[in-house]
Amino acid sequence: MELLNSFLGSGVRLTTPILLAALACLPTQWTKDLNVGLEGAMLFGAFGGVVFGLAFGSGFAAVTLTIAAGILSGLVFGWMITRLNVNVFIAGIVLNIFAGAATVYLLRSLFGVKGTLSAPGIPSLPTYRIPFIDGVPILGPILSGHTVLTYLSWVIVAVALFAVKNTVLVRHLKAAGEHPAALAAAGGNVQRMRILAQVWCFALCAIAGAQLSIGQLTLFTEGMTNGLGFVALAAVIFCRGRVLLLTMMSVVFGLASAVAIQVNDEVIPPQIAQMLPYLIAFIGLVVLARTSKDGGVRIATPTMES
Image 1 (cartoon, rainbow, N blue to C red):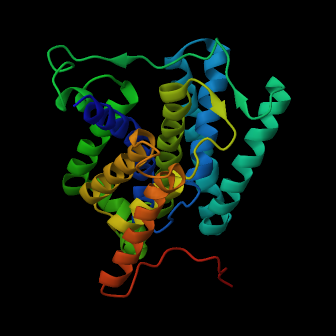
Image 2 (image 1 turned 135 degrees about the vertical axis):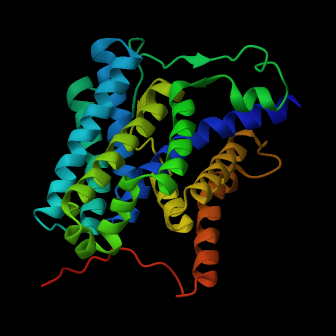
């Protein structure tokens, strides 16, 4: 039972950054500007969480300022793809590469360290124990002992489920991608919806990164997102815009990541266990391609319109 409780607790914690990044990317899929730069945005968020945390000595301030930086980055990214007509696919790839190089440079130039920045001054987000539930087997590790960002991710899931069915905003976001001319004719602002989707994407990716650096580890390591952004992107592509399916896929990926931590290396070689989330993502995309009526899902391609 202790092993099962530990596995479930790890699964919930590891699901959080994947779920946040996937929820971040969802509106960009609706607007047909799928942001493939989740990995880079998360890495900047993880770095920002540590830097702001060291500067202000507060986890709350670190998360708040990281979100603000994410919003500003989303505005710039949205302006680039809507006003400058930068190809969103290429911009996302550049973002991923740039984030890896920029965080390494900043880590060495600002703090003079290579590899990992771990300092006593880095704040850690507190975890919250829920009375009466915390000690209950299975239920306790699932519901109790997590950071506020974990609970926030599930609140966002509930809000997204409600918003998809009941809000004009989501209908406008989808119309901006599927029927932009109709939205414009009805008085909607297509460009504003596309930028808003990118702002949401960067803000939530910043939270996902902060969850990794100050919510789980209290340090920053070069390339610490370790492909989680790509796993979240796979979940978004697999779910085809459906929030509930996206959530389920994120949980599956999170539990698969927990297996890599909890399973004894005598049972499964650690190299194979670490491949599980990515193997599941790959299998899921193959299943999607085989079951899709049109043979797969097309996303933005690196071709430039004349």
